[in-house]
Structure formats: C-alpha cells, structure tokens
Image 1 (cartoon, chains in turn brown, blue, orange):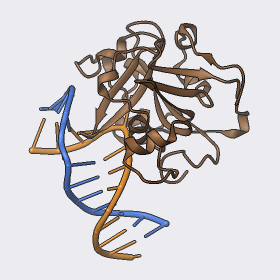
Image 2 (image 1 turned 30 degrees about the horizontal axis):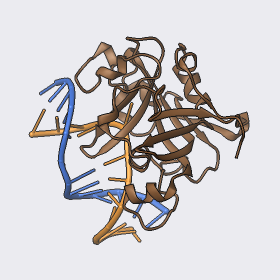
Image 3 (image 1 turned 135 degrees about the horizontal axis):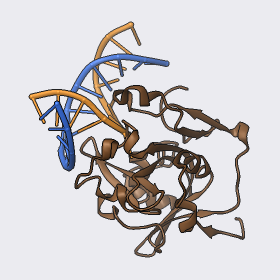
Image 4 (image 1 turned 90 degrees about the horizontal axis):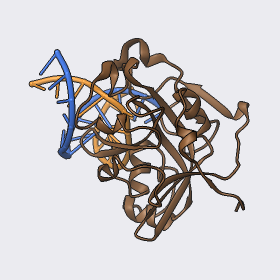
Length: 205
DNA sequence: TCTATGATCCCCT
DNA sequence: GGGGATCATAGAT
C-alpha cells in the first residue's frame, strides 16, 4: 500500500467549482470507521449537483426542506438521504456554508473491509455489484441516513488521498443518471467515471 | 440482452 | 396521488 495517506481537509471542499471537485474526487479513498471496523474503497464514479441553479438538485430554486437541510451545511458536510424509499445515497457538500453544492458518490472499488461489506450487503461472495451504484456503496460501507449532517473531519467518515491520479484519457465525462426530469439540466456533463472500471454503475455508455 | 416491476420514503402538485 | 440522484429479479425477445 502507499505510504502517505492524507485526509482531505476543509480547503479541498471549500471551493466554488463543484464540477471540478467532482472530477478531482476520482481516485480518492472513501473511508468509514464504525465501532472499530474500517471499510474503504477508491472512488471511481461521481456526479456534481450545482445548487440552486440545477434542476436536478434538491436545492433547486433555493428549496430547503427537512430532508435537504444539510445540503446547506458547508464544506465537508455529509448529506445522506433516502431514495425510492429504501436506498441511502451518500453526498459530499462543497463550497461555503449556505451554498448547496453536492457531489454524489456513485461507485467505489473496494479496498479494506470487504468481509464486512459482504455482511452488510447480505451477499455471500464479492463481485462487481458490491460497491457499484450509490445505494449499494452506502450500504456496503455501513452508511445510512442517520449520518447525514456529520462532517468529513471526524474519525468516522472521511476521504483520503494516497497520491493516485488518473490521467485525462482515463476519465470519461457523461450526463448524469436518472435525472431525465431535470429538463435542460439533464444533459449537463456532470458525471465523471474511470474508463473501463468494472465498478462503474449504469447500463451502457 | 432488454424491459417491466416491486419495494415503499420524502416532497410536491 | 405521483414521482424520484435505485436495485434486484422475472419474464420477454
């Protein structure tokens, strides 16, 4: 393993360009440590949600509800909400407080704690579906709605940089998944994936 | 390989 | 009442 792991700090998240940050999160390592159990995976797919001007964002038009409150929580806030009544989706909040920029983590390549991921998912054997898709990876890492509003500077949930960088030709940019109803914003190039990675979600490209 | 469907929460029309 | 930042399974093609 790499020798130098550096937890991403406040300054990484406290920037204005959420789309650029979403791109930079590819290759970073998402870690959870609950009750001494460490699980982690490398981020291979992200989507940016550009706040009040983005029809696909829960905060479009300045909307603010009990569910979306933590979208406004400031850089490094964890925003987790329930989708379709059963899946918990993990987002990272960027930009300064009260600017509801979010990045949805859509896929990971498992690194540590695979046994616990399998247990949490109720699967007997590891395969590409273990951390493929936002609902699946949140479940695998043991994250749920109860963690929304926490931040990425604790010892429970955080993101590390081990120095890995994908080259430009290893990254593919597409429109986002499942946001057809966002009209003109549905086609924005806000999804970033690692080319050819088997854990990347969704049908075809 | 593809399309349809059920599970069932939070918000909006 | 309806739809959504989803996923697994069943049945059709």
